[in-house]
Length: 397
Image 1 (spheres, one colour):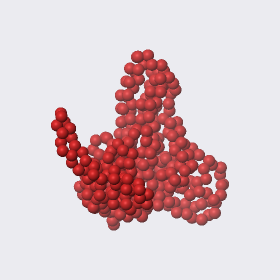
Image 2 (tube, one colour):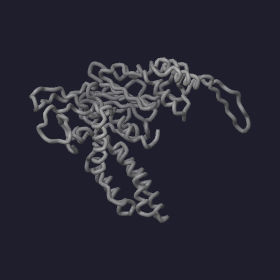
Image 3 (tube, one colour):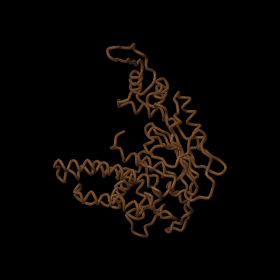
């Protein structure tokens, strides 16, 4: 997966933590449509930073990406992040061929793919010593165009046990299940067992040693749910490059990581300037290797519009401008607004967009002029208003 797919990673993260409107069983009250006086259910998404109970998340111990591992979320909300051991190398050919035959692809294409997977052999050559050929009956050939398709087909039938309330998001070999935990039931454990059963039926192995959980609490007085058996509970999670902490308003680890990485890359600019690079070239380099760090996933952690974070990042930008590494001085708040507008317009223009379902209902009558036709959601806290969809609806349009 390349660095250039950042916007899709951001959309995946946002879907995990935002797409809870019809299935999260979350209500923050009713709203009255002022145009006709009728009451409508406020089926709006509640961001992970606005839980009324807690959220559990499986995570990694070290601050590195949990890509290829598995996760658990809900209200109490369990986020279960699961890992298939050597996922691409463990796909049984006979099983994926069976699933391929159940698709409506052209039979000639199906037979061509079957021929591609059948009778594959490999051998090893080391220092002139050649081993015998060995038959290969599992594994998706990596580096091929058809490899990701075959793996996606393999895991396509992994479904949540309770689809009416739980959300399952798959990104390559990364799976995330969001399951609300209520006082009388906990479907998170059920979802974990469901994925374990799927792996057993498909002759694949779960790597629970790379799966953890984290509790996100929103000031609730309710006792936290019991840990999921076999999964260690941690205090933070790095998911697709964005670090989440158990304190729902805290982005210290993420901002610290960004500034640390950006500071180390500033040395590259200093060396380039010493070798006579023009300021325009340094500015291009700054945008490529440093500014891109702050722009990645900004639609998610941009909700952290707190003074302490903005001041630290703006201070870094000011230092880069003072040293002559950039042509203009950047402001973090302006960057967040620009990126928000770009993504929000993409969502508005494409009803098939993965985040389109997060938008509220449209107004039947226009009483006040706005640049969007949507009913403003009922907002109780400032942090909920700072979530991506709400800050676009209230502040930018």
